[in-house]
Image (cartoon, one colour):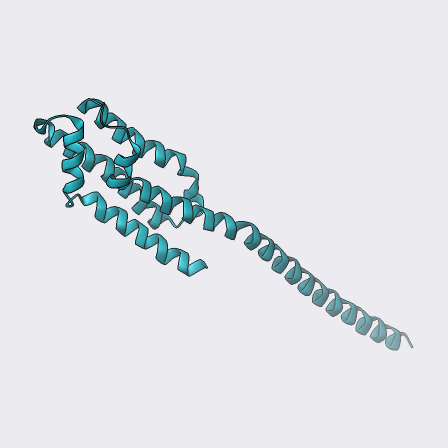
Length: 168
């Protein structure tokens, strides 16, 4: 009788243990699925917004768009240099938090595009100082399509487009 009782208790403990393990497995799986779904509902809109903002940033730092925003007519050449560099840096600093949602390689391309834009425009302004006032310098820069920053901006935009298609 004791052996039967011990056998019955052993089987009962085994059944309860298996039931407990299965219950915990499915419960944890359900909660992790709900957690992932909740994170996706929060993160995807933020990530999409980050891509939109960075695409807008890259469009804003294109020389033709930047010079239409800046009032460069009454600026001295040194003020023009300062305005161009500060505009690019301010735009980048305004969007710096977006790097959380963007792949590091893509963010590096965006920073490269910003830095090359500031550098290329600064070098163009310096090299064309003899032309005349800031208006003539800006017109000459806009006519000159061989700035390296244009390629960097377009490359970063293309990378953004490819990356966003991976997620959406």
